[in-house]
Image (cartoon, rainbow, N blue to C red; front, side, top):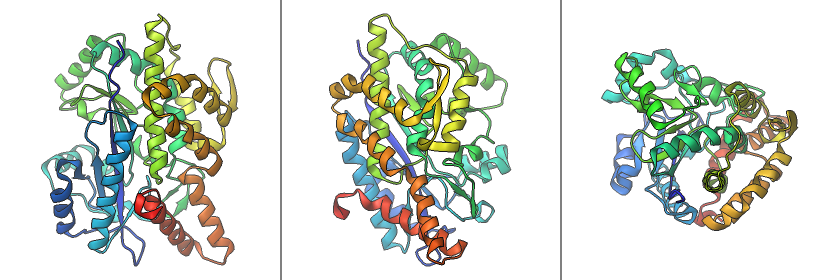
Length: 379
């Protein structure tokens, strides 16, 4: 039987001071209280006070996910505005300094700060996670093993972190360079079964290096809390439509792999070093460069690889009712990801005579606008 492939989407946002365009170091306590009143468990604080995280409930399909993500973004944006702040969906802020941020006072975050030191304090980054419901435990591992191949492709479509601490990193995704200073990150190893995975995790827990499987920060992992496989590699998307595209494409890829499995077929499992090379190329070049087609053993334009993927998953996208969202990948390629548009906004401001700080402010303004651009009230 096909797995349910229900969806859950989590997004992390940054809170911006509309005067300075820097991050808000001390948001009003009333902001989170009002958000909690309106959204309940769908909104949570993050390690840093300038961040806020939302998560949808279990969604039957992409249409359901669209409904919830739209509502959640709208509430966060509107509530922030009423408390003198703006919201930015991007994985890094163009010029904010991580050393000036304050972490949220909570036992969980105090433990992280004690355990991780400067590694966690530098986490001035935001991501998007997508859960896909897979009831069978061994199937979760099997599909994770195969779907690892496509993680760099999803990352390339999502990039929104070209700047870090007032510097152009000459990358589309600077976020992972920061995140990889944490332990237990990157593309996961291959596991033969659920029992092997559990044995490895139990060994780490018994050694005392982590409390539980929530402290695995891989690019993809079996959720420790839900019967899902959670995709975690992607930057948070500035545009809502881009986020929905990536969620739908992830869901469709898992259905394609499940469909192949029913025919006793499977995607070839490649060595992790090859997958990590494509991960790096996605960080560096995003959707405008090339990646290794591991079957051909040659670098190919990313655009051609995406066309092949769209063709492969068309049947599955149709069955899941997300053809429109999946095909939006072509719009991302044509328009560029958030990282591309941030570079363009910076260059345009500089051409107009702005200094670097003024150009970064222009980037922040663009990000604030685009974070809300796909919401119904702004169309």
